[in-house]
View (tube, helix red, strand yellow):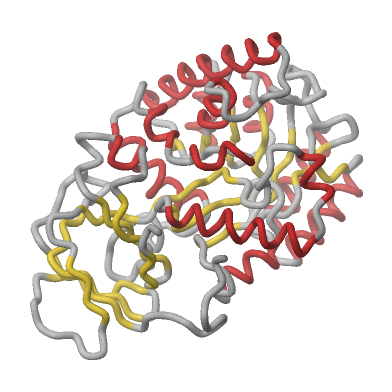
Length: 398
């Protein structure tokens, strides 16, 4: 289990990485050997100094690549099963234990920050922050919000007043964002092309987020649904597999973020998940996957800010790194890496602290064998990870 030996207090106060070749994910350049010093979870020094640092834990990473910890901007850490009915049958205590294991395994894949997009609450984020469990930093948004007849595993709200009341409660309790289902889904009873919530309801949600200095994310697929969401003030588009030129224009005009989630469809197509889907549904998933690749390529060429997301559940969770390989079909490795670092940090409001290796930033780092820019498999297969630091605390793959 991922419980710390000294909950709430345990941390290696000072860590020194020696002979670190740092990959600058902004420029794509690899540094000569450097010394990285972190104190109390913050990088305090990057230099070529060889002096001894008092009371520090020293780790030699010669011959390896150091880069920012990875950010999954569309994760479901509480969905340890792909069977939603099974999840609903779990007791809260058992559910928490399964979630702790999911978080720990995400960290062992190199993810040092995740944005949960439906399920995790602020209590779980607090437990991670207080170091009661070993896992990535967690940005929690509470439940997914949907209108009557909407997507699965959601909190149903109808009307502006009901939606405002529910969002106020979540933001009061510390939610970092809120997610609304503004269209149907691939495996949902709600038709893919159907639109969720009225314009007035969406505007009310966006207004509540603005008042709380938070933002709204939207589950959407079709070009119509994406364009509508962006016009109404939604900040991040989740999935968005069917983009058109109007969507691209609105992304750039509204300075919004795009978070594709190709791995979740790949998990179905590869037979890891989706065992109960009929032939028609499986064919629809294949079409959505291919069109998602096309939309990603279109958005990337246009300069849309694209985050790294996976949307995996249950048996599919181990495929969290496969998104690197899938995106590399239409993007350069550095573009994909920026999505999983710099852009992810911008999405969650941690620019300059997460997603970079720099003085004053979080000591959230990973150390890998090889060069991920020449071989995306260095990240995608997970076997090259040698060390992860989250909040300055070193964790080695088991």
